[in-house]
Amino acid sequence: MITLSALHKSFGKNHVLQGVDLDVARGQSMVIIGGSGTGKSVLLKCILGLVQPDSGTITVGGQPAATKGPGREAFLDRFGMLFQGGPLFDSLPVWQNVAFRLLRGAKKHPRNEARAIAIEKLRRVGLKPEVADLFPAELSGGMQKRVGLARAIAAEPEIIFFDEPTTGLDPIMAGVINALIREIVTEMGATAMTITHDMSSVRAIADRVAMLHGGQIRWTGPVAEMDETSDPYVSQFIHGRATGPIESVR
Amino acid sequence: MSLLSPLAALGRMTLAALAAVGRLGLFAGETISHLLRPPFYPREFLVALMQVGWFSLPVVGMTALFTGGALALQIYAGGARFSAEAVVPSITAIGMVRELGPVLGGLMVAARVASSIAAEVGTMKVTEQIDALFTLSTHPMKYLTVPRVLAATLAVPVLVAVGDSIGIFGGYLVGVNRLGFNPATYLANTRAYLEAFDIISGLIKGAAFGFIIAICGCYYGMNSGRGAQGVGRATKSAVVAASVLILASNYLLTEMFFSA
Image (cartoon, rainbow over all chains, first blue to last red; front, side, top):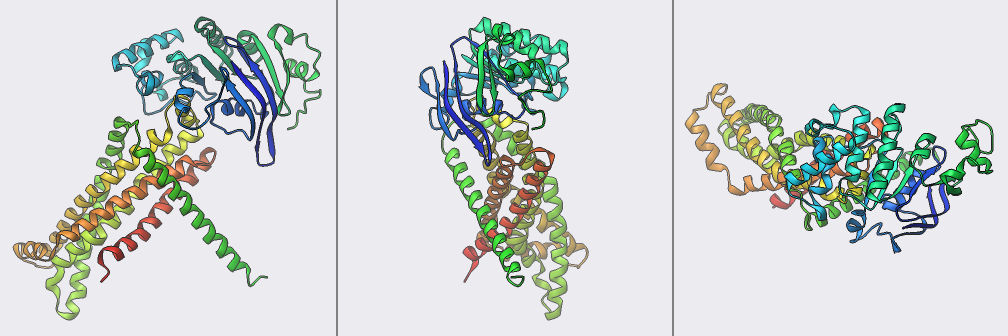
């Protein structure tokens, strides 16, 4: 479904991606792990065209990714994304945030229909209909994250990206979000790519895991094999050890 | 070496300023190209129109009122030196509609609106809201920049017209109550020497200033650095650039309209 080949991206002298190769099959939930600053978010942004790679190829469904140009909006219509900070639009009430894509563009619905879908998606992520008319500033961090999740799935995209979905949440809320993501991905049959450092998220969400280190995919395999791998980088990362091949001072 | 270093610094500053103007020009060109192609966002346009136009009325009105009054006093004091006190109504009106109404109105709107747009768009940039817009298949230039630029370009001339009227009224209040002019004569003299092109030139300036204000606000917001410091710097730069460009373009437009 998504194939990355020899992807390179540098910011000045900082060579973030140095030849990333990765395949994500249709309907698969791929989780990318790796230390802070290793380029996980940059990788997702390259696929979406928010960051232009220096070289390499990205194909989605066998077609080159339309990271710019006239086909870009149709390309992006296939994606949903939950950002790390769950950036909701402050000036819009919650339901309009969720239904943003349903109120404009190719997937435009009548306003009352869009509102009904938004309320249904809010219910799907465990929020009551009363939340629909509140503004983002009136919500807690966990609620904002769930609204962001509802927005990512509102137009039922075929591919969903989750960038640090549980960062800043308490363990119970993180568990709720993990379970929701797993349910939604299974239920919708969507292809998912998730970035996280949270190993409980990895175990809850992933079908396959890829570890990004040194600008390349260091290891990839089914989640069930992650704990048994002999790769010292993966082992150090998943057990959170301060000593090992990954330098703790970066 | 030390003798040349101030010159080198001056050269660097000049190049940086020219590069900034070039980037703003490209941004303005991109905005116009998006302005001509759908989709359009009428709701965003109406919200921007309220923000730029309606909510700027008090500050523009107060500025114009006091400026008109002060202008009448100055012209009276200057005119008295060669027994030309009678020109107060006509020069106040011409001064307001040609220069002070558009320029001071533009500067006040720049302070209020360019800063607000830059801070809002800059915050959206640093909190990834602009990235989120992209992923929701919505181009930020169309959703954020075009409505604001269009609203400012249309609203500022209206603000200038209102400001002109209030400024002339300020001059009238001072002329009649402080300087002893006959009310009917003051109004008659105001009308007698004011030409349609005086008013139209001011309104054209207002439209140009509105465009500059929104372009500067959006450009610096979209290119904001990270964090609170980045947004603060973007806001300051937007106001400074808008103010300088308003004054520079005012000179060019005045040359264009009124050079002999």
